[in-house]
Picture 1: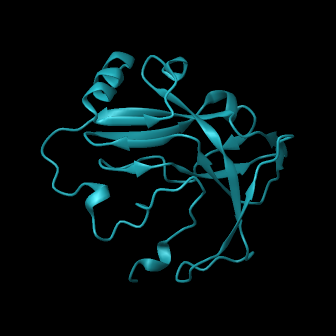
Picture 2 (picture 1 turned 135 degrees about the vertical axis):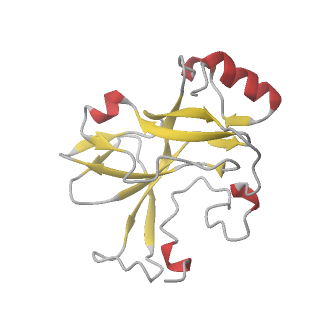
Length: 178
């Protein structure tokens, strides 16, 4: 079941959903609009290695915007810090963003119960497009969970993305054993 606007507000009152900063105008019928933060990042190396810590270069999006180009993976970040303690959050791109040829995540649209951070975006484009910090970029939807939870994301000892940040975070695949 997807939470409605009234249910999202009620869960925020209970403290099981946190959105900072929060703007009532961003609450839709069953979602909350999130915005592109001020930072983007690109990987330094052209060939990435899943067993290696691939370094990124982080830069600020200028006031005049920044032109994304195809064949480059950009890591972005949401302005909003979120916490979800009793629901499964999903981040989807806004249709207006998709109609510009912008994908905001390659595979990581689902969060875990207990996720508490900004969202790193895996941005790619089909043609050059200028983007701006603060632009609406996606929408969070929340699904109800059935049953008790033993393994909250923010309490897992091996969780790789728990450190609060306002910058994009590179892949931590290299920390896995394979």
